[in-house]
Amino acid sequence: MKPLLSVNNVTVRFGGLTAIDDVSFEVKPGELLGLIGPNGAGKTTMMRAIVGVVRPTRGSVMLEDLALNSLSIDARIRAGLALSQQLVKPFREITIQDNVAFAAGSRKTRTPSAALCHVNRQGEREQALKELGKVGIAAFAQQSPKTQPLGILKRLEMARALALKPKLLLLDEPLAGLNSKEASALADTIADINRQGMTIILIEHNLSEIMRICQRLVVLDNGKKIAEGLPRDAMNDPGVRLAYLGGEADASD
Image 1 (cartoon, rainbow, N blue to C red):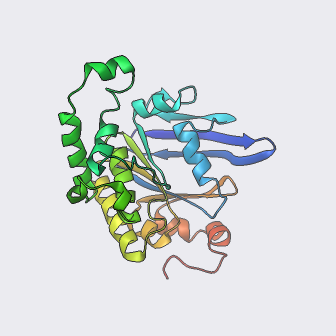
Image 2: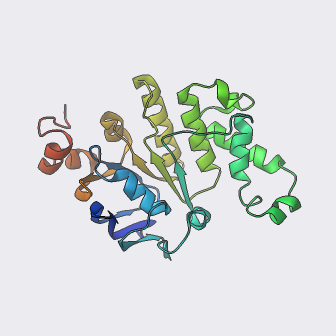
């Protein structure tokens, strides 16, 4: 199967620091891929290289047949990428539904002239309700983000990303800050969205949920890829045990 995303020998340097060192991997259509590693492994830098926040020193990123290296962040979003960030920052003066509708209408608001030609928001509001339903918070549509706990805001962030109708959804630590029950429920939602056909890259430190829902893992350490494969195989790799788990834990525990 032709990959949806191809990361080819990507290196990212900041001055004398090498944050990503010759990393390659692919993401297949319909896959839920876990991108994991200890703190400082380069996971977020890798995600930022994919969406264009940072530019590789060398190497390339391809979305299907499209080379992304020379494209701006907004061009990459239009091409089919969407990022749900760890730190959620909704528009707090409008409703949850309108937050998602705003994202759904991004094509209409790309330029002032386009925005002036499209004043009817009904279609975007209907799509917003659909995306909120996918993440399980449609009942909160008319409420303000200002009054919501972190668990609801995490789902709102995901709904806003889905409203862009991406080919590939990138999730940066969506379970961070949640208690075990909330994390398990949100992991179930992520798996369900994947089963509906959405291709996902998931950065996450919650190993139990990563092992439960991801189909394949790519493991980074000190900017290098040290393992790739089925979750149990990757986590039982000696290099992963040493770098990520201190060499003591077993994925079968």
